[in-house]
Picture 1 (cartoon, helix red, strand yellow):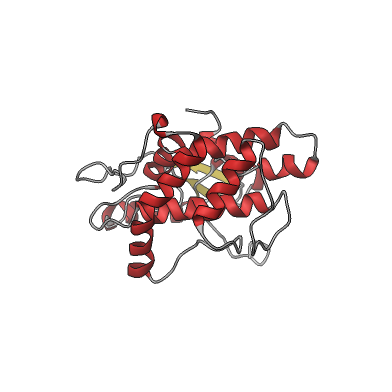
Picture 2 (tube, one colour):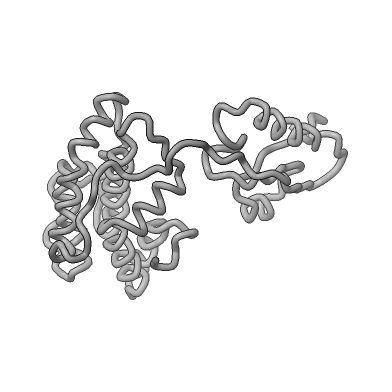
Length: 232
């Protein structure tokens, strides 16, 4: 488009990526992923972001990368919290705690799928989040057992699929309660800092990263977001 004489502009949510890609014009915004225009239901603020991005079209040459100078307005209301009180570390060993979390979240997950009519759970092909939980807990404890029935990927890459499924289960269940809006930061803080699943995912990440098998090292990537790379 640029070579044909049509100027382009864009909005960047991850500055480091944009610095490497070097598009002709980009406006970096300090907002959470998935919200390139800032907070929802705030057309005045969103229009300001769009105007700043379009203003970059006045630059004849680039690459141009500018920072948007305003943070998104904070939402009102009570802080978000998971609708279920999960068991603490004193509630048993890791696998028992993980299975108890799944049991407590199950009704909320069912409500989420009923009200939304869809779910992101199912990537691995394994039926039953409790089955996934047991396998992952067994793997990090050194007793992995046989891969669950229905798995549509081979080990060790199956671990990523299983992790994605159980993370989707937790997040969908946690956001099922009506009237309580959660940001991605809310959800990630809760999942990686407050749940047994977060503990298991850190253990799994560390185990795979320390492996001499290059496939296992590769599987470790993406299990934990970069912003949560350090254990809480």
